[in-house]
Length: 313
Ligand code: DHB
Ligand code: FE
Image (cartoon, rainbow, N blue to C red; front, side, top):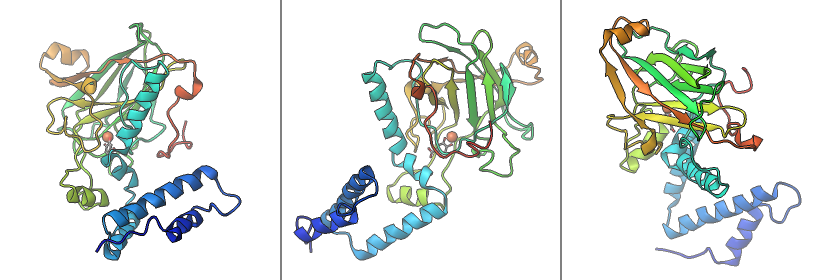
């Protein structure tokens, strides 16, 4: 039984009242967006003949999603973060600001205020003695390949279980999170550990929906970066390590060809000694090109609620 009611005066009038069109005050933009949003939801109910049972399941799903703190995890799983990136790329293209290292999604697990050092940082707290040592290094340049000194490379990644400090309270403060200021040659180096990929909580709300879509909730091993310097477009990006089962099958759609990086095992003991190591390690190189801009609003990361943002320098 499919009934059609969307075109009736009664429903049109209801939607206008829902969105406050007949009231003074409020926010015009919010009114218009809520009007469209509720119209489209009503239309889905009509087109798919959504039953009251199904509707209330969805309402309580949203409740649980919030209770689990997973709204910012479901969003990338549904391609929202990727879609916003596609729009930003198109805007850059239109403004003549394309080029440089490509952006990709931030993800929900950044924590502001990581320790800041010059040129080099040790990122791991040494507690995982079985982890593979990673030397992560690279150069930040402008589009002409000129080195950029004093750029801030803000790096964060997961541990060997795919878990992030702060969100995983068993890790030490700011473990695997550092800000490194590039040296006079634009170079940065970090000693850390090779991360594992991330998986959505198996019993969580995000995974529950992904299951209904026949999808997994896994990300490949990856490393996040914010790279910034006054006079240049702020860059939010990540690298995905080549060879991971999920390198090209990321549930959050963050992989870009230019951001897939080889991890190279180094067994030459002289090279280990140069880093003060007494065993082989894995080297990951990521060079970054920033695009210059005089627009201040493009030189900082966009605003969003982030852990400790505003509470630490
Ligand atoms: C997401 C992103 C991450 O970088 C991560 O480690 C986990 C989840 C996400 O976009 O949902
Ligand atoms: Fe991540």
